[in-house]
Structure formats: structure tokens, C-alpha cells
Length: 355
Image (tube, rainbow, N blue to C red; front, side):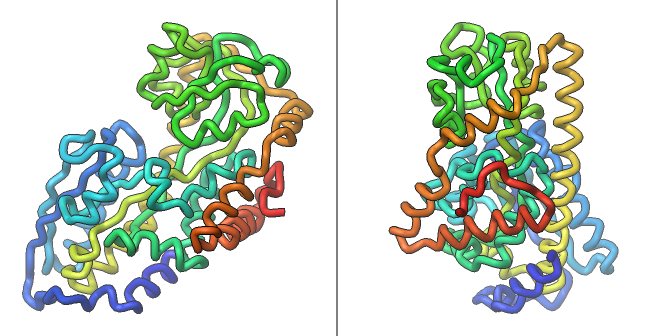
């Protein structure tokens, strides 16, 4: 798949814009940035793998071209919700764009957040979305619209419930307030719980002060944020792993790189995707172990209660697709292709959102 992506990108003339290609050896100065710190695994992998791996391959190719990197992580140059615009305008050359923060501009990339309970397997989810960039040209066109080229995909492990009270049945959620960032609120529709919009960094204090009585999040966020200190009941429900965005490069920056350097960027971008899946899964397991040692009370929602929750939800995907189709976007095609990709990878969505 990675080779098809590379060939497709190089074939559409991305190497032949108005920028001259230097025949002689050249040093390129590039700024890579993110609104999140490197402690977030998908940012850390870019810093610790993508950048040194690009440098290594350039050196292995003879060292004709080199890159001087300016790295600006943790919002030191651009905030988490301003990366798309910063890459578009060339304020930075490369950045991590959280598509969950850019739903208005990148609506097709929200497909995983409108198909909950589809797959817990992070690799299947991320590789499916990555494959959609081959199958559905509109996905790449959305990046192109904002003057950037897609390098690699990222996601988070499956969502569960972390509460100050035990959950045995769906009825235990009725009327309870749960913190949810952005579109995660959709997951609670039909559950009887009340979604309270809140970013992950606010979870701990808001739980401690009673702003809400639980949160919907994933192991690799709950563990490091010590949420079980204030929400010790962890109910495993498997809402699903989610695609959250990816690294992109400014189109003019990419076009002024020699073809052999472009190829390296695209190849390493594909490998970065695979590396983040591995690291994220490892982080989730580590976090689970930390929570168990901290005294978390783990339980699993009974299958019949989980099925009841899923059946009580409106068809989020169809609502989303109808809205985007009215705007001329091929949301139905994206929805079907995504679920087909999951099924082809052995996943069995608990609800056929495309039916």
C-alpha cells in the first residue's frame, strides 16, 4: 500500500511545481511542530523515529542532501487547533494535524468517530483510514485544499468508561454526567448519560471537584493522567479505537525537495504510521498495568447491556453522511469503504453503520 501511495503522489506532478530543484548538494531548513508535547506518543514517535530515520536514509544515499531541523513541540510555536492553518500558510513546514479538532475543514476524516463499536484493533482502524487515502480521492483533496501533503496516520486505543461509581447495567449511566472531548459526546447518545464537553487535561480536576462523575477516554490517556485516583471504576465497553489525524507537509516545501528526498519522506511516513500503532498499543498496555497497580476496579459491561447501548443509538454515521452529502462530499462512499476495509481486516463491527 505504501508503494501505491508514493507512486500516486509522485505521478500527479507534485515534484514539478514552480520551485527549482537543485542539482547540487543542498541543505534544507525545515520546521516541524505540533500543539502537543512529545509525551503524546504520536508526537514522540515523529521526533524519535521520523526525523532521525529521514536523516539516516539521506546519509545512506550518499549525503548529497541534508536537512537542518527546527523542532517546536508542545505548542511552543503553534497551538493544537492551529496546525492545519500553520502548515497551509508555510509558518511551519511539517505538523501534526488533529483531524478531530478540524471537523469543519476536514469533515470526511471524522468517519471513525461516527462509527463507534466498530473495531478495538488500532492497527485495523489506522490502516483502514490510511488505505482510504488511496481509494477515495476526496480525502487527499481535502488536504490539498489546505496546501499540504499527507505523510502518515495516527490514532488512539479503544475508549472505555472511567467513573466514580460502579456500572453494572446501562441504567446506571442514566442522568450521570460524563466528560467528553468534542465529538466523543456522540458515543453517549442513547446511553442515558449527559455529555459534558471537556478536554482530557481537565479530566482529573473536574472529576475531583464533581463537575462530572466520569469520563469517556482510552487507556493511554487515563493512565498517565492518573484518572483512577478520582474515577476508580473502569468499565470495559470497547467503544473502539479511533483515527485522530496525521502529519502533513506544506506543498511548496515538498515541491522544492529533490525527487529522491520526496520519496524518502513518503516512505518514512508510511513506516511512521506502522510505528505509531505499535507504540500506542504498547502504551495502552503499560497504562492498564499502571492503573491496576493503582487500585483501579476493572469490570466488563455485559454483552447484552453493550448490545442494548449500541441498539439505542441513532445512526450517527447516516446522520453525518447525509449532512456531508448535502455539501457535495462523498461521505457515503467514505463510510462504506471504511467499513469494508475493516471487515477485510477481520473486524466485525457491532453495528452495520453503512446498512
